[in-house]
Amino acid sequence: MSKCLKIILEGDFFSNDIRELVIQFFPDYIIKKESKDKADLRITVIRKKSWVNSTVARNGKVVEKFTELTGQNDRRQIKTLVYKTLSEFTGKELKWGTMTGIRPARIAHGKLVEGKKKTLVAYEIQREYGTDNIRTEDLIKIAGLEIERLYPLDKNKIQLYINIPFCPTRCNYCSFITRDAKADSSELEKYLGNLFVEISKVGDFMSQNNFKIESAYIGGGTPGILNCSSTTRLLEKIREKMPVQGVIEYTFEAGRPDTVTEDKLNILKHFGIDRISVNPQSLNEKTLKTIGRSHSADDFYKAYELARKVGFKTINCDMIMGLEGESSADMIRTAESLIALNPENITVHSLSVKKSSYLKNSIYKDNLFNDLEENEAAEDIYRMLKSKSYNPYYIYRQKYTVNNGENIGFSKKGHEGYYNLAIMSDKRSIVGLGAGSTGKIYFPDTDRFERMETVKNIDLYNKNIESIAIEKIKQIKSLTNNIDMI
Ligand code: SF4
Image 1 (cartoon, rainbow, N blue to C red):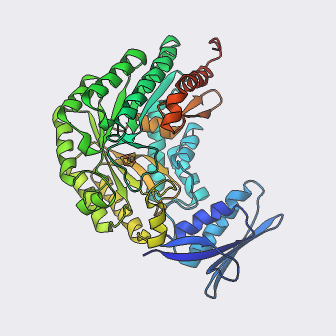
Image 2 (image 1 turned 180 degrees about the vertical axis):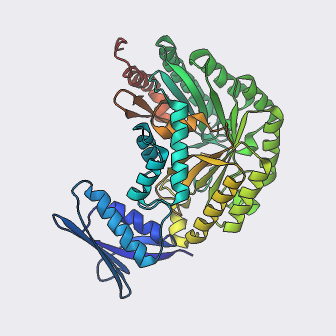
Image 3 (image 1 turned 90 degrees about the vertical axis):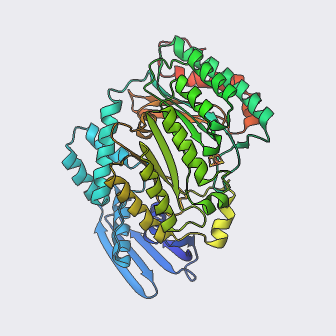
């Protein structure tokens, strides 16, 4: 059961960095800020012009460290000093060291692109961030894969994301804006009509201006809730309007196994879908009921077998670490069962509890999770997958994960999801269509990107579809300066 650790940060230098470190050093605690006289743990940072001092104190135990500031990167130096102080205080080292960014492979990517050898990149990353050998090696492999697949950079190569924000039921951890497909069937039809308008307008513009879709991803929500007729209409519209002729990967997130039928899978195959996600999240029946999924473990196995029978190049299965009521043994059993099926991709998520989920209140009220145990299970699963030739090909870290864990896409060699590689690298434009979709426009010349957001509220999306489409076109148009402004 999680306990509460009340902390006071004195000095308040880069307090977010320090708080993130505290969360990782004390994974079995819920961290709360407290006043000096009531705090259990006191962290003090004193910074002068040329030096900085860090002290960690709790229950009479005090560890103090000091370093001279070089003036080159005070923020990183202070973070490293606090890391070392916490490390000595707790007797622990963190697998990620001081690396707390959302996409850790970016650092390795940047260094490799500068032309540095892998051994030098490994040395620099470990010196600068203190990551362990496993993480360092994986980051360099992921960055190497990104560079191999995505270069030379090309502003006309676009990834397409289509959002279907409807689901059969709402999972208790869900933070997406998603509607009940059965209750809102007329809403679904109305939404599709507007989505087709957006696909048509944006697709026409892209086709006429030499943009090419490299990979496409239909996600949600649960796109699998579309019946055969709607699935066909959607895929026909994409084929008719979007420049998808040379697409190298086409993913459909069937998601919930209870939405998978053989007829629908045949339609997907017919339209060139070659990567499909069938996601149990857990194969523990009790957990599936607790989290509000309307399917059983058996439904998942049947859906998986159907997908195999119909024949897709790549099948992905998602699982989540830290679901309500799950023990580490439950999580390991789910991972073992997935490995036994031998899908090409297995994605391991860490539960992220966001404000808009049903779970948000109960997690803090009832202390549902044992983070320490879950961290150990995550490491066991990481090792297990790697020993079965599943290698990480993307890693990202979210805020508010219960164990401060990562989301990791594992893949058999040659099946690494291109869309995921592209989106994680920040080296490709992603055009997101549909309510709640996100995307970005990447400018290779200046190595920067601009976000592309779409309103989450489905009613507002329906109401403003014309202006939404115009705005998207303007953003895509900004990629080139030799096209007339609309
Ligand atoms: S399937 Fe995904 S989008 Fe739908 S309710 Fe569950 S978590 Fe949310």
